[in-house]
Length: 68
Image (cartoon, rainbow, N blue to C red; front, side, top):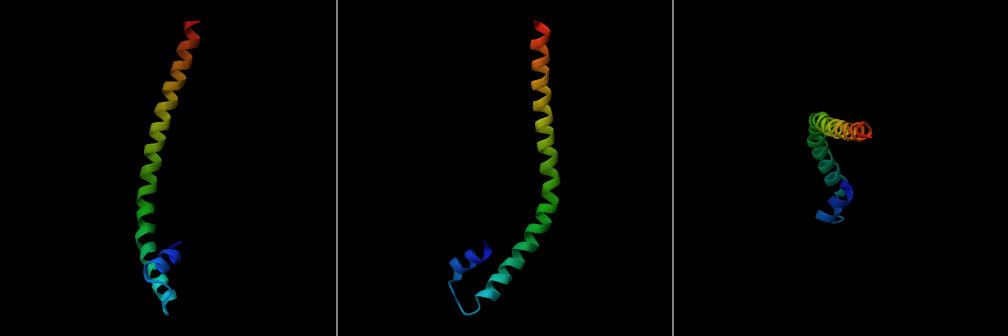
């Protein structure tokens, strides 16, 4: 995908491989540490949301069975 974006931005120039590798390296340098830091935080947030949602769902189910 980065190759396609590089070609879109600069066209098929003589040094497209160099331009593409430079853009890819920069994107990797930014993306890898970012995902390494952000992924665990997002995972914890999603786990909290799903755990609370599951707890509420099970509580409602339990209450409805208890009311019978």
